[in-house]
Amino acid sequence: MPIVPMRALLDHAAENGYGLAAFNVNNMEQIQAIMMAAKETDSPVIIQASRGARKYTNDAYLRHLMLAAAELYPAIPIAMHLDHGNAVDTCMSAIAQNFTSVMMDGSLKDVPDEAKPGKTKQVPTTFDENVAVTKQVVDLAHAKGITVEGELGCLGHLKTGTGEKEDGHGTSEKLTNKQLVTDPAEAEKFVALTGVDALAVAIGTSHGAYKFTEPPTGDVLRMDVIVEIHRRLPNCHLVMHGSSAVPQDLKAKINQYGGNLKPSWGVPVEEVKRGIQNGVRKVNVDTDNRLAITAAIREVFTVAPEKFDPRDYLGPAREGMKAICVDRMTAFGQAGNAGKIKPVTCKEMIAFYAK
Image (cartoon, rainbow, N blue to C red; front, top):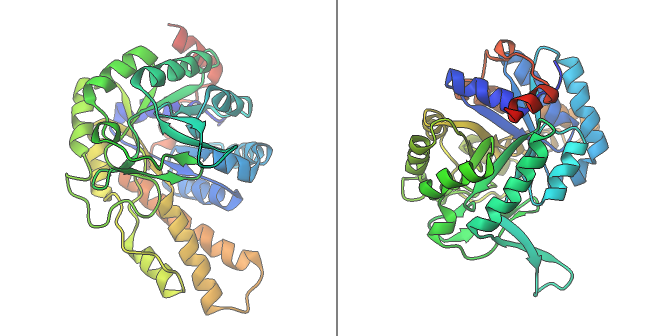
């Protein structure tokens, strides 16, 4: 099956009441782990790469790895998505590299960093700025049949009012609660003005392993916001970013074998499932896979320090990530749906958007 626009997967998920895990990748083993899990569970796949991942892997390598995945797993529909695109040019460069979906994260913008001459930093945008840049990407992308995800609100911690920064994305600015929590009324307006296919919302989640300092409650994880946005926008595909569960057993294993991870908690899978019941169709998962990979590698290095062949530790790392992918694909309900999705090309999507 060819690599398909993400909209085709989101629409099927909405019609059948399930969610799709979107897994970030940086190398071959991660793509292999995702595809092995997809085959085992008969799951459609969203593979995504950030700007940092594209720089690390190189677009040419990434493009050919994705083409190889499509060739080796012809029964699995795959969407190739740009995570947190920061500008129109970034999104268009991804489309030029055969990405079938892009995210224009207009919630932040790059400005000169006065403390670091020659460097930039990211700061929150206004609603109007976000609408303008996102609408520009939607118009350009839809003309090519490409899916667009937008974002309204900034990822960050509701308890401390701080943003977060990881993999070249995020702000270190002190943020207000209004900036950290998506306003449902603004979300309704944003979708109408931009025409995005999917909307990422801010509800107190963040990237990385340190999302919450204790098991999250409604004070720091605003699932009620998703419920209200879905009530207002029942046909909009919602997206949860920073939604790894941060399994305690993986953290313990990392620390057992020489790591030094501080106490922290992630987003419980049960809360993600609640989101799926209320319009969430795409759930970003990255940290959990990183933890699984690191735990496996640390164990090999500690238990068998004589090992030096990369296959001896990357193989177990790949299996560790595969296990996480299988678990999330099953929990989110996407398992068993790969064979039910009709292949759709970008050319066909151009006609769909032109209606």
